[in-house]
Length: 118
Length: 114
Image (cartoon, rainbow over all chains, first blue to last red; front, side, top):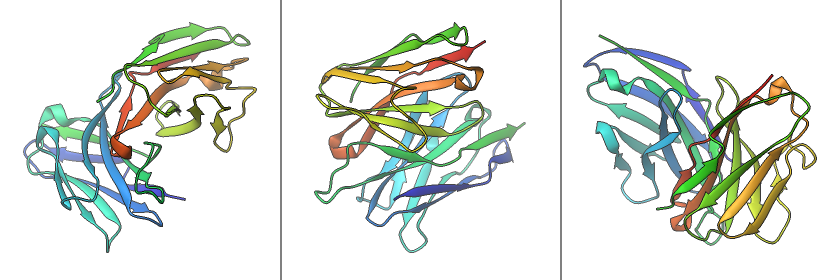
């Protein structure tokens, strides 16, 4: 079975500073990996995804993530934090079946709340 | 992409009653998923709903408490039965697409049980 661990339930950065949210996964087969953002009282929005193409994935709002198989990691970064980035971020994994596809069933990490200080 | 509509968006219910949440997708999908997000928590999969067969429930979730219907390839319902305050959560419907490279979510149903 697959699993996801997000290191740090709360991350606080200053506006303009680097954002680094950590995600490690466990999967016996090559996974699909996702980062979602959830703003207060809103639904989930997909930031980016890894589906076995380029290991460095660029997403919306200036975020990117790098898939590192050797480290089983998929950390999310943004060079310069903005106040509007304050939200909760979820890393998720979807496991492919033998045919190489997945039906989109996700296992989520615990979530990381990002706070951005002026 | 897939557009998912969930109803209701929120509700306040009395304990002991039941609420049925509807999920409508704008395209045909094989599987639909129901998740629960308890306050301050991550998303936990409740069950997978296949058209024409019984839903598959995850550990800790049972059909008597969370009956699911899947009458066709674009619609599903989740019922939260005999509610208690512990059932207060956001319930989300989700579908996959693109061979699993995409996962789309409804806006969720925010349930408060009093």
